[in-house]
Image (cartoon, rainbow, N blue to C red; front, side):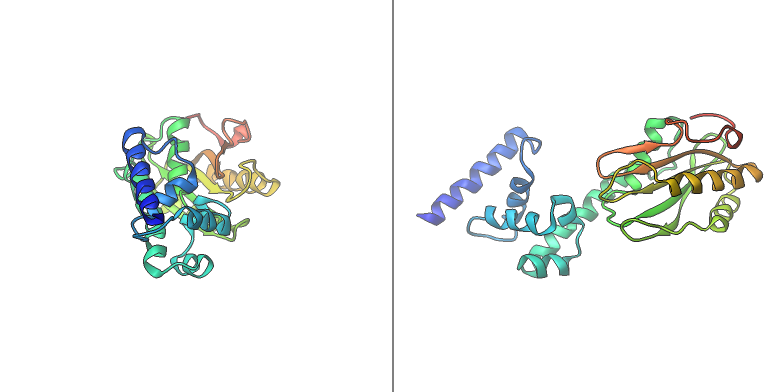
Length: 234
């Protein structure tokens, strides 16, 4: 009888998803359904709750390495891989939109592009987005990878990237995993210093966009870019 209840529950969940889509589902319910394809029988709801509780949130669980998922949640290799695959699939879908040298000629486009770079990153990264004179992306260069709360930025590396790619303008972006998108004093100081160095080689610093888990912060929008290192606006 217990197995019959579980089978009926699974079918009801599937039908609900087919009819309503996934937006009305809670995180644990979506994970519960995903686990159907790794756990062929039984109630996966308790396991879904346990896995999210172990990592603190669904995004943190999906970002984890399969070996850690398996070890901390007591699940097999196949289950751990199935969970971890979601990160890479989602990341590629997000980034596919930006594959063909997008034009970042508005703040909203720049923000969306920067968010795509930071998708599923649980450590701090700093990128320089190099643009041509039409604000089209030439290339995006990873400058630093840090811990959860720091990344070392070397000015020489930033300047070399801009010169090598013959950029007319650049956008800085970095993330604050698990924190606020509000810039720190060090963020502001580093941005000002790098902006002045870029200005000296006739490369415009358009913006510095900080990406947090659910918010973003634009230096341009919040008037934190000094006028002397700017030539125009997005």
